[in-house]
Length: 475
Figure 1 (cartoon, rainbow, N blue to C red):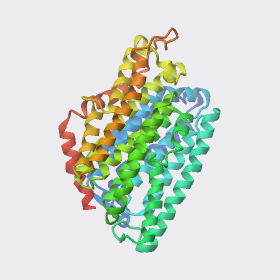
Figure 2 (figure 1 turned 180 degrees about the vertical axis):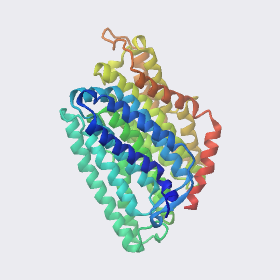
Figure 3 (figure 1 turned 135 degrees about the vertical axis):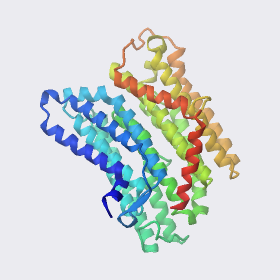
Figure 4 (figure 1 turned 120 degrees about the horizontal axis):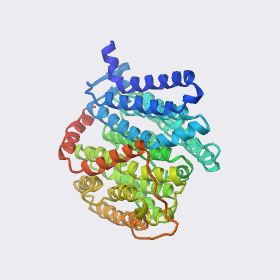
């Protein structure tokens, strides 16, 4: 193994270098200049994102524990872009934290460490690397959930997440142990998965751990409470980056390692998809707090993602990746508007948005586009994402499931329009006053709008994803 082969881990090495630079900067920067660390962290991560977009060769490291393909490289770049948008939207909030509590560097270290863990999960070639990535991605984010330690809800959310995550992690590890006992190896390439009882039980326990991370029903109970208590930027990270990476890893493992158990997990995905969609959508109708609202919305979106897994082919893989990419821009757009308003006014309830269009029309339009994309209304990108998911499920004859998914789209349209009605049709004497968003927040929202409007209409992107998704079946 020479230096050139280590460049296969370019995403991880550059991110680790940024972590070390942030630690050094925290030590040597004077107290009065601590606010500049926020700009430094965002600029360094923007450089990392740009470097990640450069071409990367395929290969393996550490005897096959770590694998890089064109597809995993592409998806890591998608996650990088998502985190960059999130950091841009959080810049002003972080600067306030620096002024009050001097905790900005901690935020960057924790979120970069969590992202590093997600990268290891995505490139894992065995269960040991996978589990290291799982733990590294989870533990820092539990600290971030309790980041605003002076708020009771934030502390409660941190406790709920760490306890739930510990149970899910232990369950998943127990499942890995069972599969190791039956196959005699932890390497994906060397494991022989058969439909014996112990292997099936191990798979179910392993799946439960990943289902917790994706917020699939019935492993979703932590989601709304944690999102409500967490800072908005952390809730958006959980909703978009963490969930997207876990869905990607689940797809790869189901299509490759667990392919021999297809007859078992296909039925499981069918039932959980229905359960997740209905629970997410029906409970979202009842919410008034926007973070809880978007939490149940994200649960429902996770149910839609499972439709792409049912086809177990290149089309299904392409639609899942395509939908997750669209979801990144759509959900970050919605969370970005919520964060901009919360930073300026502290208001996070749907009723607070009455008459918002009359005072802040641009923010209202961004929220409108984001919600329409999440609902799947043409011509925004979310429509194409859901259309291809439905097409993948229908290609295998799951017509009843597609019909019920369309019913859920209709339900989701109703509660998304509740927010649109508040902004555009309702009037209020105490409407949120006009305020001017800071440049970084504006840039973050502009990127999400460009993504929402362009991804669905740029057909070559889908063709490219279809081409590179074939690498899954060569693993």
